[in-house]
Amino acid sequence: MIGPVEHLRAKLEDIRRAKRATFGSETHRFELEPPLDEKTVLAFEKRRKLRLPEDFRRFLLTVGSAGAGPFYGLLPMKEWRVGVRGKKQGLLTLTLVAQGCNHWGLLVLEGPTRGRVVYLSDLGALYYPDNPSFVSWYERWLDETLWGYDYVWFGTGMSGREADFLAAMKSEDAAVRSEGTAALARVPDPSAEARAAMLGALADADAQVRATAIVVLNERDKAALEPRLPELLRDPDRRVVLEALRSLPGTPHRALAAPLIRSEDAEVARSATHFGEIPERDLARQLDGPAWESATTALRTRGDGSATPRLIAMIDDEDFQRRRAAVVCLRMRKEASAAAALSARFGRETDAEMRLHLVEAIGAAGDLEALLGFARHEEPRVRFRAAYALREHRDPRSIAMLQMLASDEAQPAGAAWTIAVQARRSLAALGELS
Image (tube, rainbow, N blue to C red; front, side, top):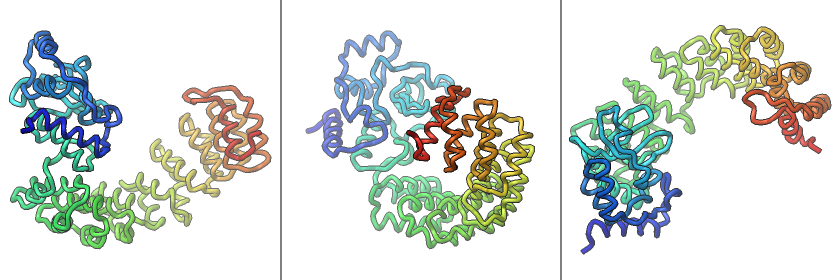
């Protein structure tokens, strides 16, 4: 009979045979380092004055000491940190895995959660996977990898298989129904029953379940979700409306978001502006409201000109963020009618970063004379940005200026290369680099 040690090894071998890949697996390739001997483990425990949780200890002695595991793999003993991470949260832990971006998987060494794995975020938040021990957590990772589960962050959400998730969706507890619905997103090939359950969850009495169902269907079966979006946009709960708005891209219903840009709920208004298909004149009206940032982003790809006067007025706004958003928007729209106003603003602008945005916007507006002037500016950062912006102008004067800048060896603060290098890059983009 295959015991617990052998079956973990067998599953690892199955994963290698199936040539699976998961987040971080390129670092360990599903290979474990050899087990530790009892003497080494005892020496560690004696030095630290502790006893490792029994199942973790057994794993180290009989299965492996590091390597194959969730995220970037199990850390070797020399990289374990005891009593460092989790201390502020009142836990004594051992660092098991690095999850990236200063997130960690830890093993709790004492207290009521001893033996469990806990995740610690860069902000100090704790999350306990629903597995009661290290080995059950590790085997969950093996199983979900073999099953081909699609997850962003292993160990979060409900564990189990499709049948378990469907059973959870029938619970009287709305939170359990929501968890079961969310878990279906990880199943690689949902059955017809699961797809029907997802659609049924759109009509659940609980708003969070409905919102979760939208998220899952948007990932797994957008074609089935699409005809339900008009109704979901009218849902009385903002959570449902927000998820419906986020699901609009790629559907024929984006115009239905237009009435919601005037919502008193600032997040709904911003989302409607960002994800909907809103006429430029309506977006222009949003530039003074809570959705102004989303409106300026959306206006980057509109071009009937009705918002241009309002955007030009915004480049003199006292608020730096609004001013920058307007300048970037005008640059991306290549608004020739804004050239004079942008140049006038450059003369008044005191913020160094904003001056660089203005150089590019003026160049995009087609004011080559102003751009040539910037190329001779006393500030190296301005000349550098002008050298970049000149690549958009296939004109003999532009090429001649770039050839002159190709000998300017000044390197502005924060730039990765000199003005000369930037000028040569722009010449290459114009096909003029000899």
